[in-house]
Length: 278
Image 1 (tube, one colour):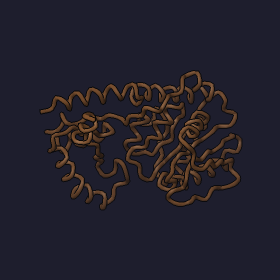
Image 2: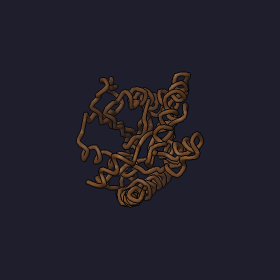
Image 3: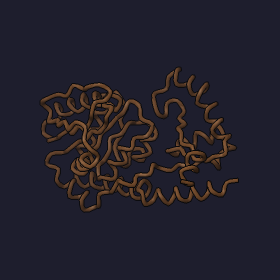
Image 4: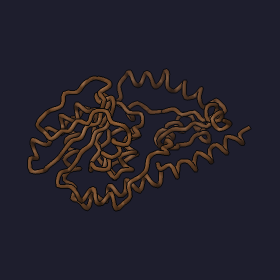
């Protein structure tokens, strides 16, 4: 109980994006940043607390505007005690079974998560690359509106699935693709890394950090059909060894940064620091 009291009172989680970093820059997003976000963040930082931001970029942003509060900032991933990583042997076996290259999309709010644009790009890719056998698996309850699914492009709708069945699909599929219109974080990207998928992510923060700016996956602009199609094309035309290497490096990053065994130690150290705050 004491630990939970500390969390609610002292660890404040928020986001802090400069316009253009997490969504497209517009006069409206600039006005919101200057008139709402900056004053709010200053109020947060004045409290007796530690502020947990989920990306290195956000920490750099805060230091840029409020350097006097640098020592209050941390960047700790979410605690995911039930997420178990695939092992390297399982990863290699999956990617060696690639007669049909399997793509996966997972997102309850399919429209916000960019499924219409992904479908458009995927179908154009299939029309232009008939020699490559591909499959697109979709897991969604379509909670923000039904999406029309083409019938002739080897697309499999699974509907809304329980967590264990969704994770089983991650372990079967080679490439996870979700190019959201808006996304503050995206735990599903971490689930993909843990299960040996290479990733097609949105070309904004913090997702760019997840894939090391393209080293551990591919980036595409939301709603940009050409950009998404190019990412699909590049990921599908990787030779098997390069695809396996990319997936192994993503898994390694998960194990070193996002796994529960690592994050719980960091949180324990943070709780100890909070307990000593005066």
